[in-house]
Length: 307
Length: 295
Image (cartoon, rainbow over all chains, first blue to last red; front, side):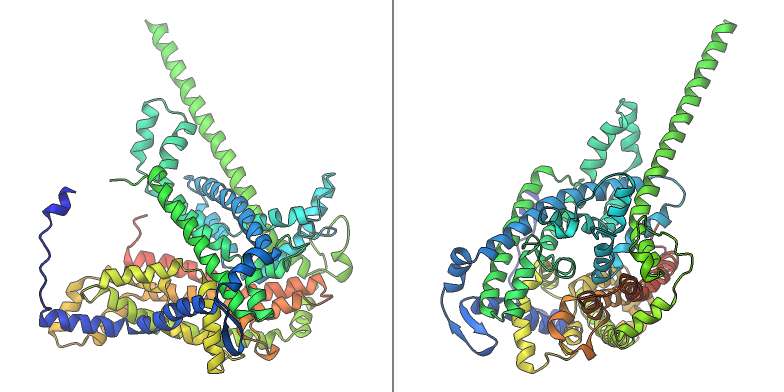
């Protein structure tokens, strides 16, 4: 508050010649972005809103139908609710798991041991592999009869479930596969861990804190900004989750992995219901915005920022 | 007196030994955990290679064959001929090359405008650039498809390439961060010598920003190579398929032998793997040249 009143009042005046020159120059340099922003972001946002109120099959002209698409989605489309449920279920399973696993791996990598650079690259490696290729490999690993996982379990005397072809196991299996590509988040947590001043731990040790207490009261609070970033990004990621489901399960078995983005893709590009799919896209947009807002709002209570 | 001192000394030694032992134990535990996790990350790759080298009979056996003693290198050749992966490779490489060029040109210009020129409203506009990262792709996907459909570009590479010439928020951000760190005295000196802004970008900034440009090149190459949704939506003719799309159609065939599929997957992964391993070295060099990292 004090700072605000101390600021000099902004004077309204015309721009000097130098300022005008710089403004023009700056706009020239960013002009590719301005054009792209108008064509690939602003126009699509508004026309998507428009299409969502129409019946449009790509051929012919969009037909205005008012709220009909939204009414149909909410009253007459079981797959819509199922896909929303599947996605939220997937999100609620994958998000906590990925936060816990990423932090655990980052703490491991933060050890002052030999070969950590090598393991850092190793953990990061799966994130750069094409999702289609890793999907192919995981399909084979999770193969009910001859896959690596179930044959290994059989050697241990355990009869493994059919993973991807079991409606109850399909979503957890995809979460498990998703955890394999957690490397970039691990790197972010690791960077945050390395920023924590060592004196904090020394002070805690002098006060008699054990290593669990140090993790709980120093490490965790210090990396909350990264957890926050991970949650926001992870929300958008979960609601757009597509390629792995498309390749590995195709939405099955029994629609257990029919996720929101997959259902939307099918409505738009298989059934060519562009207007209907646009309405779906807008609901997705609103859901993601609300989820992000909840995370941002709550962050004031748990994200710790150093002065 | 004497015995007391000896006792103290001994207990101190014991405490020291205990601490040493604890440290050793925790190191060992950590190493075991790291190796277990490392195994989890690398096992799928090893299993892929192992399967790719098996005979048809070895794939479906129990207990599983881990090391095929007579590696079937022929499987790689068979995979390459079972589907036109050579063709897909060239297609993907062509698209990647165009996208990398577009990404470099557009994002250096945009990042320069957001970092080296001070204009009114610049930082507000930059917040908008970052805000676009929050927009789910599904919202813009359909109208953008309709635009390209009206232009008659569906079934061509243009929808995959052209947008890269209009900037990308991630790369703009990365380059802007880097450009901001270059001393402004250099630009001022060039300006006094009569250099235009484009000249400054070309002769002063770009040579100094090599590590960042390499990073952008590598990342945009990897993203484009790995992209699936874009080619899936825009390409229909199998002659034009990218590697990821070709691999997907190989998977979805009614009966594809696992060893050939794993060989094809390995072939699809190879370029990004090579780039990654090469980039590791380059990044380390880049960091040591610029001294960005204190570690």
